[in-house]
Structure formats: structure tokens, C-alpha cells
Picture 1 (cartoon, helix red, strand yellow):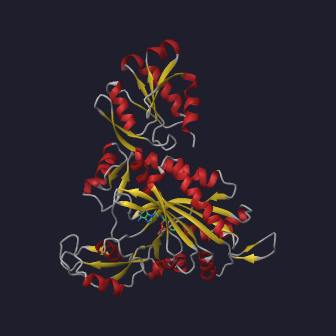
Picture 2 (cartoon, rainbow, N blue to C red; picture 1 turned 180 degrees about the vertical axis):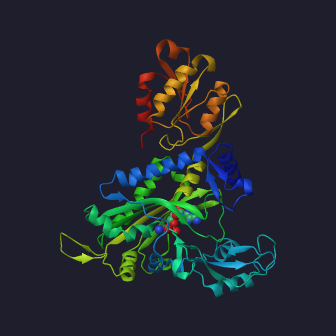
Picture 3 (cartoon, helix red, strand yellow; picture 1 turned 90 degrees about the vertical axis):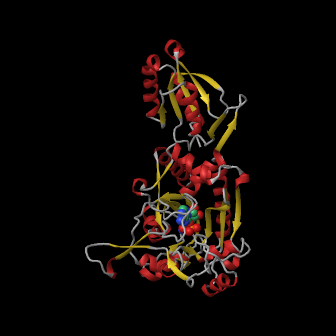
Length: 457
Ligand code: GAP
């Protein structure tokens, strides 16, 4: 597998990801999705909507704003407790997430998630934990640090105008539970999913797209009858895992981590993370949580509105329970490139970069290649225009054909369509497969069917 440095360089070289605000010296841990990255993230979201919403008879979508009434964050508990512990180096002013510092210093033998601030201070002192930047051991006391981004709305900047950028998309779904249920005449169980940006003022972002301050989430809140939560929790763990393997992620690159019962919030009935093997080891890709009726109950309490459900079968009224699979688009983006990239050694000793992405996810489904620019461009443009009405395809008439194949392999384009004299004479093209390099002869009028069949997910 690629190292993190190789990944960053690959992503920049081919237009997947650039450093954000680069010409101004960058903005720490902000990244731009380039032309191919924007297509890949779009395809990730399409795949998620297809499998989690459109192909489910239970689920619908929603799209709520980034800024919500600030009471939402009081009710959800984010304003009080969406914090991480931090320490500052008094010598060089480097700021570290204190729990992660402890975990690193203990070489992973201590799980410091939820560790008390005084225990963190004690550990740092007793073990003389050094600042990773300057090497001194002169830390401030551990303090909590809110991850919420604060801003003001309207013309007056006082506390009454304080609003927050959402740290998760889920709360927008909870507060619309009743609207969606009524408007869509839904009966339990049903799910509401949305894709959208979330913002967290992370103390130590890093590892490329893995931990950033602005990211996109794909969240499904699946509402169900209390008592059915274990069934649906297992269902969505399995469904999410299969979603990844069906997209080509190798099982050996995935694992499941069940959060220990004693570490769970009091309302939680279980949380399992699907972990991916990143260059620094297995780490969280996707969180699946069984959240009881905690969030809906809190919003009932703070808003005074009933979010209960009247069961038409039993005439009982209750607050639904929730199972929530929550995925970060950027983390899946990383996982897919790491999982799919290969630097293949060919028989003649050359190497060939290939991104074995599932065709459904590939930024371009095919590249159209006129063999000789002067002779075949007109027909190639015709083919490109026909295909681009239905698929994302690219057109390349730059270098020798071999080099053009190499580039399209490296960016994951599954099919290369060559337009040559046979196309002009017989109306056939050669379609080369990215992974096997095998070639098929296909009639121009059959190319769409050929692609449709192979791009499907
Ligand atoms: N609503 C539940 C929730 O937000 P979470 O475990 O905090 O749960 C869910 O986040 C997912 O969002 C994570 O599994 C990860 O994929 C992604 N995520 C969280 N924080 C992130 C960050 N700072 N940068 C990139 N992705 C992040």
C-alpha cells in the first residue's frame, strides 16, 4: 500500500486533491478537491444515496442547513460536552490533543478516551511526556476545548446572535423527524438520510483528509420501534460492510471495532466502527451507533414539541429509537485510493500505475482516444459527444497512444476507446480494459450498452 506521502503526491499530480489556499501559503489542513477528486466524491455520494436511500423501501432523503437554531446544540448536548482535552507547550506554543498525546506516549497501551483531566496531567508529569515539536516537557494543565465553530448571524454581534456551524448533519434530521414522517406518511421503521458539510475545530487535524476541520458526512438516522434496535444495528453493520466490499474494498483492509460497553454514553446501546487499514494502521472509517431515543427525547424536552410516534397497529405512543450509520466522505475517498492503487511491474520491466476503482466510482468511465489526431479526431469527437450525454467520459489526443493509456490507467478510467481506421471503415472501436489490458472490438452503436453493463453498481 502507498505511504501517506505517496498518496498526497499522487492526489496532487493527477488533480484529485490540492492543498487549500495554496497560493497564499495554504490554510492548515484544508484541502481542495480537484477536477478528478470532485468527480470521485460525487460518485461516492451517488453510490451511498443509491444503496442507502433509493434502493431501500424504508428510507428517504433530506437536506437541512449548516446553521440551525442554537437551541438545537443545547438540546443535543454539543454546547456543553462536544469538547476534547488539550494541552499547550509553554516553550513553543504547540497545541496537542491531550488524550492522543497520552495514547501515543503509552504506545497504545492506554485508551485515554474519556480520561479525567487530572489523570491526564498526572500521566504527562510522571512519564515526562515531551512535546513532539520542540522536545521539551513543559505543558500547561489539560483543559477542555470546544470543537464547535461559532459565528454571528444578523447585523448585531451579541450573544443573542451567536450561531454555530453544525458539527454533524444528524441533528438537522432529528428536528425534522415529525415533518418528514407526516409529509411522507411514513410508518416505522424508516430512515432519513442526508449528505452535507460538517465543521469541527479539531485540535490536531492531520493525516491528509482523515481528520480535517471541514468535511462532508453521509448520515442515515434509522427510526424504529424500541425493542427492534439490535436487529437493525446488526443489519446496518452488515449492510455498510458489504457496501464497502461491493465497491471493491478488500476485506483484509477492513475490520470491526466494538466500543467497550463501559466507554459508551449512558444512552448508547452499542457503537461499532468499521475500520480501514490506513498507512498509520487501522483507524475509523464509519461509525454505526445504536442511540436509543436520546436525541428525539432531548429535542422534545427543549422545544416543547412532541416527537412521539403513534403506532397505528397497537395504538401505543412512544419515542422511536435510532440506529445511525455515519460516514465521512473524505475518509472513504482515502480508503478507496489506498485500496485501489497499484504500481504494477510489467513483463518488459516497466511499471504501470493503476487505480483499480470500481467503474461506478471512477471519475471518468471511459476515455476517447483518436489514434491519429489529424485523421481520427472528427469521428472521435462524435463518439465523445454521444457518450458524454450519459457518462462522464474524457477525451485525450495529446501524446502517443501508450502514454495516453498509462494516464487513463493511473486515474482509474476503466475503459479506453480507440478510434482508428477501422472505425472509419467499419464503424467499430477497440475498447481496452484498464485492469486486464484485454481489448474488445465493439460497434459504435453498442458502446453505450457495453458501458452501462459494466459501470453498474
Ligand atoms: N452523528 C454521529 C457522528 O457524527 P462521528 O463518529 O463523530 O459521529 C462520523 O463522525 C463520521 O464522520 C466518522 O466515522 C468519520 O468518517 C467522519 N468524521 C468525523 N470527524 C471527522 C473529521 N474531523 N474529519 C474527517 N472526517 C470526520
